[in-house]
Image (tube, rainbow, N blue to C red; front, side):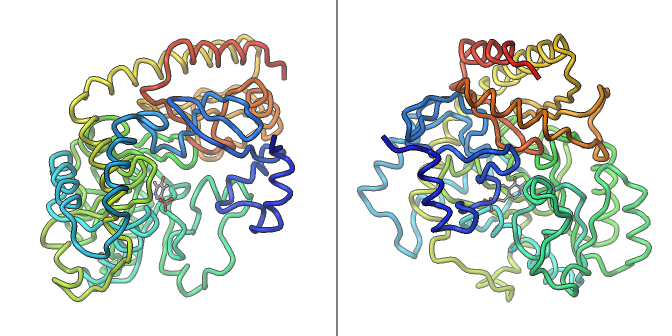
Length: 424
Ligand SMILES: *Cc1c(COP(=O)(O)O)cnc(C)c1O
């Protein structure tokens, strides 16, 4: 039987760092990655035949669990008809109508192949629409790996211990301003300093890439009001939050209407997809209607949209599942907190809906804040212990974890019981 360690040794000779995305290398938990053979429900199975309860869920997409039958059937059905035609399909229309039903802020949209690509498109669109150049983002928020947005961009980069990345030119970095999350004063100051130069403000409405940091509602409301007055395009990056807490996005929960919305992850049920959507007025600036160019060979891919239609129709039909996911995650997180408290290990667990993060620190504090230093040694020991016991969390203390409807009480109890045996 294949061995994870041996596979990684081979992998290191084929891919930089042995991986095709940095956080997969498990470098921050001090071990080699596991190689996954298949997944079913809330479980993944590695090449050594070991079974894990999965709380990473491919970083969020699998809200129905791995290989849910509605997704499997839809993809199989499409597979027989073809995988890509490079031209229009009815799948795109059906898919788009479901998105519009869920998001009142989206009148028109463009489908692409990843969240990164959708953000790139949104930025170009915002600049072309406003004829301005500066982008404002917030520290710790991640918006994909395009050059302009890799400034202070949270988990992946934080995990590697660098604040920014080489290969992004100074000129470009200068056009991106990164401000403290939840700090409206610094935003107002920036608006005065760069008056009439800011093209857009992009924000994760729940910051999922620095340890599930909740937004101050007034912060997002003020951003909305100020951007409206100053002709700044306000962008919600709902790649994680879209369809995670309700049939729609965080904007539905907050009652805030952004100009552009970015979606990804859940809407593709594990197949590559991204989406940027907004008002007719802005979206029609895109080619071929307008003169802002954007294109893609696999955009609106029939397999991805088939999977998307399946998962979104399911979520629409079973909206009560969100309440259950919320309750189950609350129960699970309470149990985790109880066990860690009993052991006297200082921690912060943040949660919103079915999304949570586990953070270890040097001494016990009430709330997570961005200045908090992570005790990476404790995280490493915790992570390795849990993995050994068959519990797979996201392999970095800065990343979010998720529940799916396939996680049953027995699975959650099993994870808790494993944690009870952990000794720091
Ligand atoms: C994952 C993520 C992205 C990037 O999406 P990819 O499909 O990985 O390119 C963008 N924004 C947020 C908030 C994300 O979580």
